[in-house]
Length: 225
Image 1: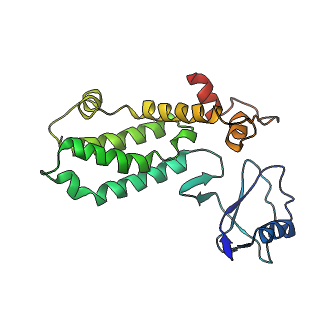
Image 2: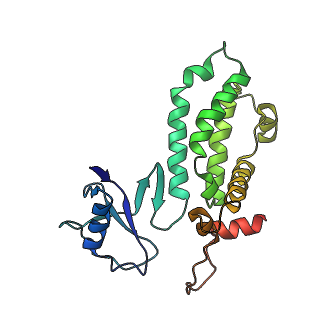
Image 3: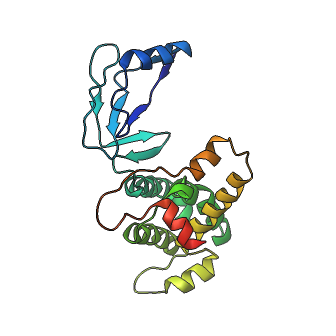
């Protein structure tokens, strides 16, 4: 038997999920639900569903880590991006001897940086809805890393524009934008019934709260088009 370790994401209209139905569906596929690792999250609803599986109630959380990404109660990307930056700091620190080495060329160091730190931090960035303050945090992290690789320390200074030129790096918002549109291009080539194509085209119809609507990934893409 394998274990099913996942978060049950309960939306505003899904609060009547039956514990027996969930257990039966898992059993049909040969899976056991690990109660200690299964969490409950209510997204965009003030109701608290009382969901139980095999007896005890599930712990309700505001954030949940799934496949390395942080899923938040508010549906945003800020928590996931903060988690990615933290992972990037750790990975960059592990390779500290590489960055300080005088026997490794800058070109090689940048290739290592692209394949390690950048890949870790920008994992899943195609689906991010990036606010301006979060984008600034991302750019600051990458700029600090590049300055250390290029051995530019205070009181020596260099503008971000010149830094991107000498390291042949793109500003982070352009990097994210290119990856996002590359992913959209691949998705649009898939059949209409493909799950990723369905998710891309999905437009829920319901009334929204008063006031200015929050910026979403879809609105951000439409503004960039």
